Image 1 (cartoon, rainbow, N blue to C red):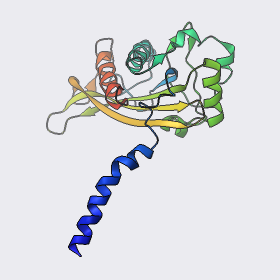
Image 2 (cartoon, rainbow, N blue to C red; image 1 turned 90 degrees about the vertical axis):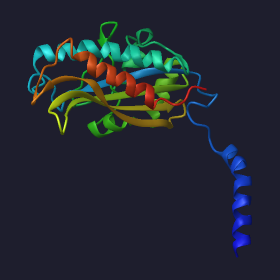
Image 3 (cartoon, rainbow, N blue to C red; image 1 turned 180 degrees about the vertical axis):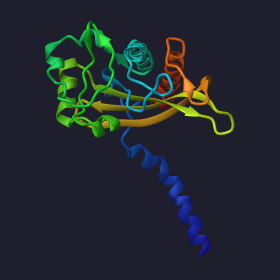
Length: 231
């Protein structure tokens, strides 16, 4: 019986390379995906960040709003290491693109590109958190922009207080999905990241232009880590 099992394992090991060759390639390995575009990048303000966790003042929202432009720059730069990227500034004002926007009731912050906020395409909050859009809309976006796939990014900003020492650090919870021109979700990953530097302690911290960099740096590290390998 032992000999039979050994022979079975040897046969399986022999077949594994052949089986692997039959699997569909990952999004980072698919030669059909050469050109992509970021069509949506949203930052949530639901969990509350700001002075003493009170997010929503005009100044704090303006600071985060300004930071979304840097998130978009980071994202397009990282994506360009793998694919040709069509910049959002090339299409955000185009009616054919903006007409595909979803009629969303939720509120998020998005980058301003050529004077207009980057649209959202998820019909509900649940869809937004998972990077879900209609397959038909994904196909339409790819057709309108002339790309092989579109990228949707969601970033939730919050904080974390240490258990032993009550220092507070920035946290971003990031979700990236990639939809191809056939309307298939080819990639969906989430990566949470905690900042390295303390931005406050004992439940007291402040969202400012100085501390904003901690949320941006955690986003950058997270985005780079969850991207598919470079071919």
